[in-house]
Length: 81
Image (cartoon, rainbow, N blue to C red; front, side):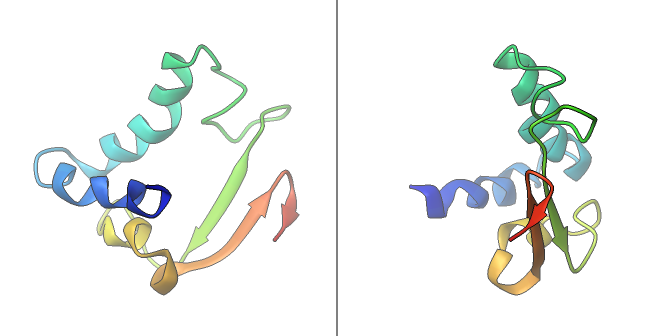
């Protein structure tokens, strides 16, 4: 099922702005898990991973749904992988 997680963004983008989709996957999820400030944010002390993509997911959500095409770098716990 892991390979299908990103696919949910495609139909949701038809009814919800891309910024809201990204927010729901990050800060809103952190709030629901009662982990605000620990996950879903890029801030000192947080468990932050960073994805570098070739494109702007605010304009085109497929930048996030097709990592084989758009994902350029992953930084996990401050270290490039």
